[in-house]
Image 1 (cartoon, protein in one colour):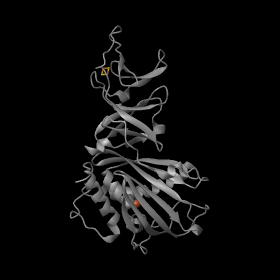
Image 2: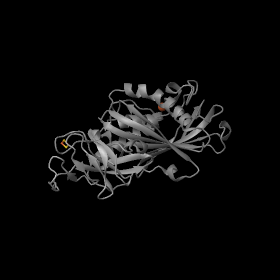
Image 3: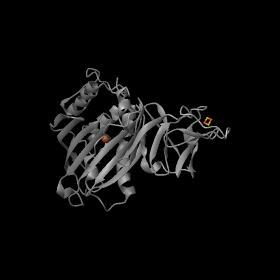
Length: 332
Ligand code: FES
Ligand code: FE
């Protein structure tokens, strides 16, 4: 399954602290925890002894090695950071052999999130978010939002401008200004890039002071990841040089359920985190009921299954791209 060869976000880094935390990715239950060095780990959430959920356990310090161990909640077996069982409390003199180990997966941290790869490999690039390294932009994660649809339906919605005047009326669009000018779509090594996308927006961001034409570019940077760059007309925003990039990061919990985060990279350094999150919540909670109403929840890759217009060419391109990659989760 190609999806298992990709890195997927599973939780906010800040949500994995002292206690082990559960997560779910592509139908696999995970336990996330941190060792004494603060390194994040992602394992199968099942103890190899009797199948109890390790996420109900606790992290205990290991004085001998200055490390930490994950303790199963049932019989207290303790596992080191590599997944090896080091201690079976019912048999104090027993040295567990190499076969007594938890199933581990590769885990990394980036963009304020913990990322996991399920195929046992550690290699491969995480999706790029160019704005991440731009020190002029402040970064902030919004979410998680749990959504009952597939990851590809979410990506398509993110690329879609012709819903603005209806779903986001008075915010990102208006019913009197729904025409979509032609825009360009091209293939990139990681997906697609749509440029020259224009929208007339009553309230393009929390900083906008009046309706404005906003120019967008959209990039699909991995099958379930997309980034938009938004540049409003200079006079329409309170903050000088205002611009923002937003990444959409999706954890495909399974084929038809997702956990979603947005990572904002914004030139707004004055507002509080809560205010910026509130704007993003408002917009996404407008999208959510429509997204959850779409049938099928999986994205049809046969272009004859749904109707398309020139305004939808980014999404048609995205469908061809997923088909070419051989994506199977969240598509039909
Ligand atoms: Fe985990 Fe027994 S089920 S120690
Ligand atoms: Fe929307």
